[in-house]
Image 1 (spheres, helix red, strand yellow):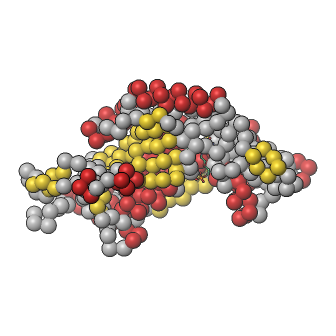
Image 2 (cartoon, helix red, strand yellow):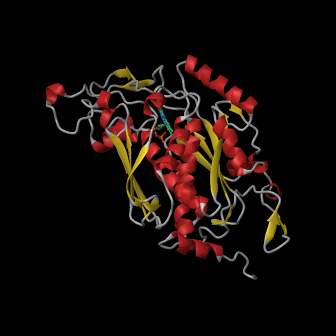
Image 3 (spheres, helix red, strand yellow):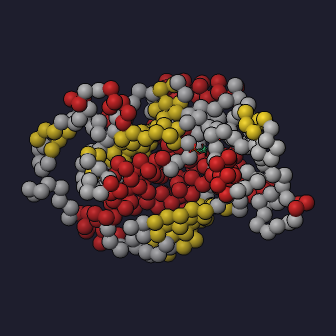
Length: 388
Ligand SMILES: Cc1cc2nc3c(=O)[nH]c(=O)nc-3n(C[C@H](O)[C@H](O)[C@H](O)COP(=O)(O)O)c2cc1C
């Protein structure tokens, strides 16, 4: 089983992450991780920080001569603008006169207020530094290692953006090979598969920016090549859809998750929702639709896993929302932290990371071992039909 933890503040010296439970013998390099970090940083509507950052993860432990050795993998990503924050984020106390002016005007829609109440902070900087989505860079780095692992078993995870504000793309991912989805969305500034929809989405972002406002949207994450039998219906916490939903909802600003056609199922007849089965040429069954998104009864059934997620508009507006100054109790404008106009394309890449991480334990539960060769032999001997 894998476990992972991340640490680090948004403007602190670095982010660190530990991923434990990966087998020995997986080939991995810093360049493999850099690819995914770069994909997270792209996207129309993102602010200037993305140009400062150009994230790169260093592998500090768990890998020798290019292969995992079974011990915990430790990664480090330096924050490139740390020198500008060194004084405001110092670990030692320089004394009351030298501390930065406390932030006291919480932004509605952020953890600012709830975090201050919970941890009794009088300086909101102590909340916003860790609640910031900057932390998702480390999730993407850790998940890049999982992507390498799944590659060995023919499992690929890709994403694309389906909506930004009112601009929607026709969802036609089911017709496309995973590599095509990846190439098209990586080439699009908004990760949309359809160029006309992409233009509309960029127009919507421009308009929001002009108004000093922000936009959210929706994206789809797809895992192909996932074998039948991951997850289980026997306990609530083993249901694969529940495990994936938890992972997706852990992405900051993601407020709704759908499996397959998700919330579209609410208005349809059962005959228009369930995926009928037909005799397959060899073992098992064949389907012509995948509205279930590859999961039935909490168990993967062999079709692509399709997850949809909704991201709310970002809560830091350049035309700030009304709030209360917690120090004085008077009406105020929410604090202005450097912010993006729209981060849906980046969130889709984080969505890939969370699906990769969420699939690890159900996969290891079924095929796990301590080395890649052990897992491969289990995987290759898998039998999908009880009659085989
Ligand atoms: C990749 C990514 C980038 C984000 N960038 C910003 C941002 O620039 N400004 C902002 O206000 N929120 C941003 N967010 C969303 C906030 O982190 C999130 O809304 C906030 O932490 C409150 O959490 P909640 O929306 O889940 O309640 C981003 C989220 C993601 C996934």
